[in-house]
Length: 118
Image 1 (tube, rainbow, N blue to C red):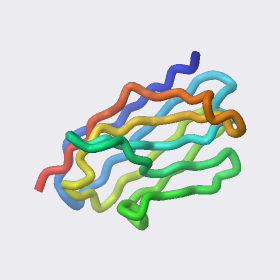
Image 2 (image 1 turned 135 degrees about the vertical axis):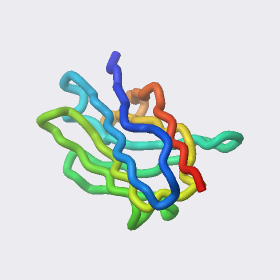
Image 3 (image 1 turned 90 degrees about the vertical axis):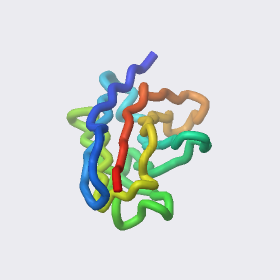
Image 4 (image 1 turned 90 degrees about the horizontal axis):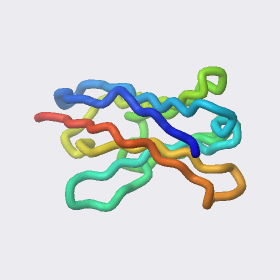
């Protein structure tokens, strides 16, 4: 079992920034695609961004040019830098670690809440 520990959520005004962190102790991090998902009230969970072990990034259209995903393999931590936040970014954000070749081996963080006020 891999325990993902998230931090960095909170309340911010529109136009502000937050950085989320996801620590994944152990060896699984090095063989994982790391992703950030979010789920707003009444909506389905959606992929926000992902990053492969080689550093290739993928973003949802709604966050392109505003959010940046990164990973520090030495610290076994993934990050999501969120700039120019909008009220519609309000959601619970979840970290995900998925095995690079066996997609069924996947772990989730507990979620961290992000609230963007007008």
